[in-house]
Image (cartoon, rainbow, N blue to C red; front, top):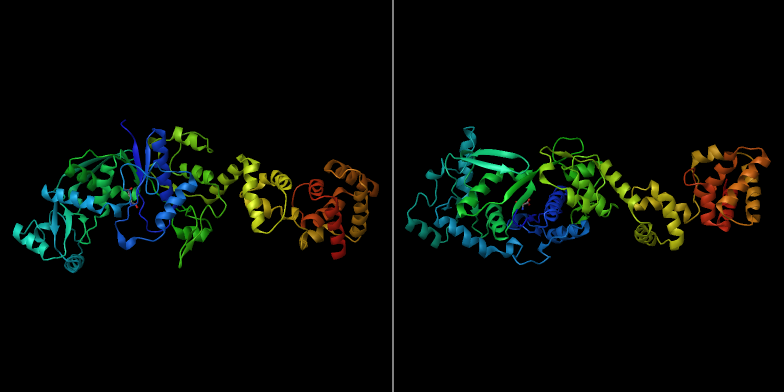
Length: 501
Ligand code: GLU
């Protein structure tokens, strides 16, 4: 295979949907697998849909996920500029080349005229399309003399340039995921390539850029499959070798039917965007801000439409690069599973080094104005990470390590607090004070001797003690908590509950 060069070519029309992130990921993995290049091209020719801030958002998202382009907007490269609005002059030159060679023509029909034609067709229950059958009755350079065309253009009349679709021809396509596809050109229309505002449309710019940027494989969403025949024809018209195409399956709603949308995320409370998106009048949550680890998200997305054919689910990026192939991408849509995404995050937290967790965890504590030391925090992390889906869970499940409970869970009180509990606790507390060494082994031994002496069950003592320390009946082993918070704090909490209940 000659040099592999692929591109991610988003349009900056808003935050990048998770489906777009997966497209970027598959491009990235494919490029790295083949020792090739991964490009970022910003396709911003449609100025009506342009959204300020979206380009920066895309770049930041890719960086956060570690899918760093080798070339592209914000990343340099020799075949730029990589932003289409900076390439306007290039497209002009190429579209005129197609007009010269007879593959494209000027069309002067106004939007109103076309609207009227559509209305008339609708009335007859037909659909109007600008194609080989209709174009000879319409207002375009195919039906006008050279002088007429020139004078219209010179007088500043509104025009567009359309592609001249060949009539009744079967185009043979080959998609790396979907295989052979045949399309009859009579089902296609004479797409606009160039608009009156001097801007190319997506189709023209996309093909010109893929050619000039030496793209070898176009890997993109299924929604572009209907454009593939036109794109093949455009390559033919230019006399260029077309890249190979691969159209990725849709990402479906958790229920299984229909494309995953922001609304699904809002409904079920999960993000559909990699990072938070904030504009004056809209906002959307992001995986980063919700506490997901970038590698967990990458792993989850890699398996959303691809699998190497084994039971393995956890893959490092290196492994993904090694194993990825387009042949193993499925044709059918992949159902998004928010619970599974949480599961991946949990797995990645377990794999994470405690010191790395600490860096993130410490920040969370600082944000809450909680003073602590790292040695202490590391012990808390070690104790609680096993049950954490998010790093923030370590704090929510272990807040009692940092302050005494403000209130006690009612149900737990009912269960744990008896008439003589107060007396029991103060007695136990006194013995704790006298303990030569305040560590979990000693505390445990003392507790066992204490219940034995009192002829009571272990729970009679330990349940109210736990309640005093954590405010409920959850948390790790009581002696472990005691050792961590220390003798004075234990004593203080035991007194506190006796004064309160
Ligand atoms: N700009 C197109 C998009 O937003 C890119 C399609 C392609 O990759 O050809 O999806």
